[in-house]
Image (tube, rainbow, N blue to C red; front, top):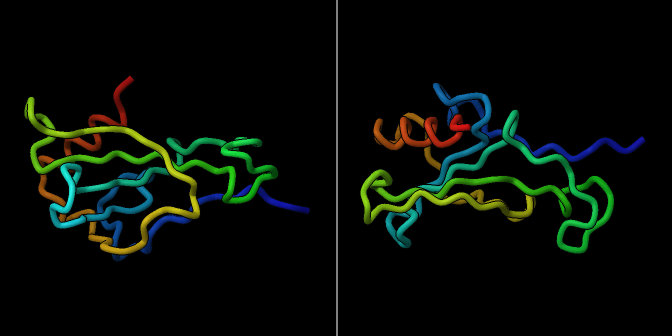
Length: 117
């Protein structure tokens, strides 16, 4: 019997103090305006979507992982805080950082955006 694909969360060492719905946190060191990328799962995950981008079944090919890309000042009028989604298997696994290494105002912003109605 096939089980639906479920994106895995980074290990406890990376996710200490993070809400249950955060899968991983990444920092591109300022290469783009959205310096930090936070991938979501758990209660914020999308169900597998048959036909998503041409894939069938319940594997990673049709599972989208939502993410939030934020700049160093996401609440500023010139800041960036943008939602997106990506195929689960294309998730960036490089440049991972610890949740607690994010500046406190970035963590607060991410939690606020993730829990807004």
